[in-house]
Image 1: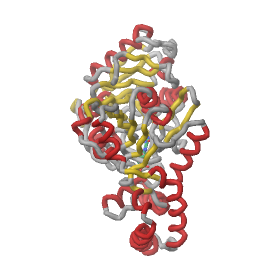
Image 2: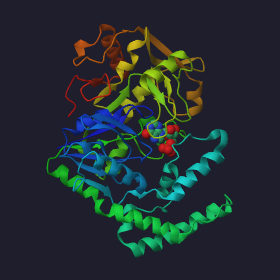
Image 3: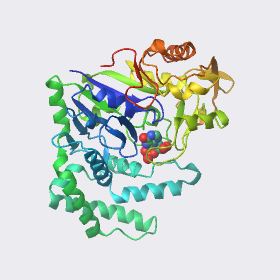
Image 4: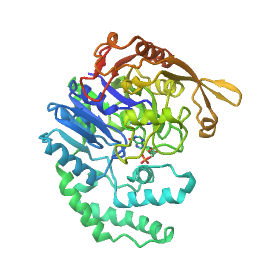
Length: 428
Ligand code: IMP
């Protein structure tokens, strides 16, 4: 069976949790492939409401195998906290939740360095989630990382930690003028983490490849969004992992040739947390109304999200980069109250109209959106279960977005629960 990847089309927080949750009902394996507990996937299902950060959303399907892939950065504390949350809801994780031995560990000094970096950046701060994500991937690339699998052999772990900590302490004491981190204390902390993590550590890439060979259905669960991807996103205002579809094969440990479907999750409007360009941002009452209606506050940090109209230029770029075979348009109901709805079809940059998403943040900052205005529907879509149940103006809005993106919507979300979903075409 081929694999499907589900990717955030914009700057994260598109509502992937809901989409992944209901798709997870129909797959055998769910693999998180990027990011760490900077992600926040909200899932509302018959078992309750859950803010998932690290554990794949497939955990709610009792028959699905759930994998935290090698591309993920794992905070043992965040993992244990989330594990307790799902277990408290009566969900068994025995034999169905694994963490890749190749995944990197978020160490206490990563979180510390994330804060120090941001402070040092001053006005150029990225506005990170402060969870140590940048520093852990920096260490991965610098060959200074501590991997989950290192925990298995305690003697080798201690030896490696001693070496790595020497490098970190040199930085902390000489650059930041801080006290060094005590090796014995840190090792004790890691050994406590080891006790919790050990039953879950596995060569998960091999497990997923075997599942594919057995004809099982695999879903690759993205985190953040395409425009936060370290390569494709609005660099430097991005996260530090490969969040787009191309990163899924690497982060899950499978050949790219197995991924035959890519579902892009789009919000019916646009949001972003943290710094960086957002061409359609609304700094007025309309933006406030979107934030209030959509309860646009970060799942991980509680920060208010910046809001704006749907950006089809950014969306088209996302369709192209990820090769979306279909889309999910979620949170359409948030627009129910607006007399007029808008979609950005192009940008005006230096007196010229551009339809391609610029790669440079300086250009993006100067882009002025060109909007198409459409009549709003000013009635509730929350009870729509078929496309035809939507008010005609909402149908027209959805159809126009599809045209602008060059990608059909397989799924439309009209509320937070699983039921509040319109299945236009089968996704899998
Ligand atoms: P970091 O991933 O914590 O390093 O943050 C880098 C940027 O990505 C910041 O602008 C964050 O707000 C943003 N970011 C990271 N994770 C998420 C997410 O799950 N949703 C939305 N934005 C995110």
